[in-house]
Image 1 (cartoon, rainbow, N blue to C red):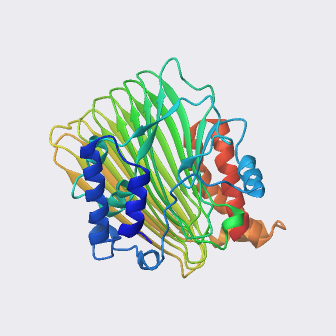
Image 2 (cartoon, rainbow, N blue to C red; image 1 turned 90 degrees about the vertical axis):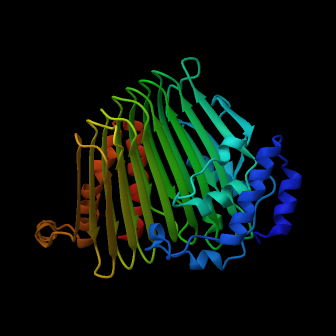
Image 3 (cartoon, one colour; image 1 turned 180 degrees about the vertical axis):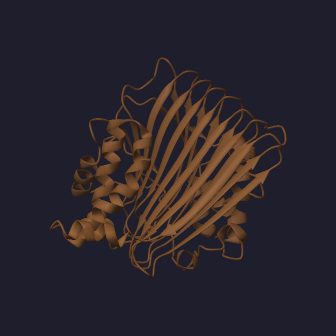
Length: 421
């Protein structure tokens, strides 16, 4: 249980060198104890309930957990030789499964790691993450350490008790460097009857003229909870392409922020949600044009069947001095069943005059004529639905413009489509 007793055990085992940081960690934990999980009374959580998560007696892993032989084999099969792989088990690095070529180091949390705005919509989950945090994984990519193939960061949970898995990862991409990055939350088949939660933070900082292609694959087990925060900081002339793929978890919340700190940067932020049964996914994006002469594009899609629900809240803020900023936003939702539900909430905050900003949203069903076309050619209705949904999704996957990453995403996507149709 996330109470004072387990917290005392945690901070005794993992003291922080900085007394200020230790005090801020204590403050974060006490704030979580007092405030708990977010509720639907909060505007940013209006359509997402964590009532079930609150009722679970969560445990925190206090040390590295050993995977069973079968679990090691299962995870190994997900670690393509086309990638460099880094694997975290219950929040701890698994050195056996991780490649030693990755320039990763671990640093104690410092005072600056606790700087979070009071109006941050996921502050309560940050309080939990920082309250039980003691170190962050830092990956520095520069001219000497550039990787010749994509980097995959894998998070898994393995425990008998319901475990809250915490992780804090920071990736710094130096000026003119490139990185192809995948973050993969993977559910283990051995844990299908257990219930875990992932509370992950990822910060990616792009230097001048840096280029990052990123895919987030949330494929936890369908009894799990996933709370993820991904934040990008773009410098001058930097280029970002991001694809957030939500497939797993009973309830998930993806917060993704993109901040422009200098001119002539471009960000393509894309997302795809594919859910069935009573799965629920809440996608909250925040694009912040602090500086002008930048371009951002958001395009999120969802494919929902059974009683699945998706929420897309796309917030764009263009500051007064951010002239010549361009921002586009589009949300398309495909409902396969009558009980499925999609909610779209565009939120534009524009304080500059000379900008271009727009948004659009659609909710629809599969075209009956298209299905009939397949049936008339001897293709089953099930296969027709798979083909049409795949066609609806593939546009976003191709935005990655990297064949290795695209093939990996398509493989994961096809597996999910075969499960639900």
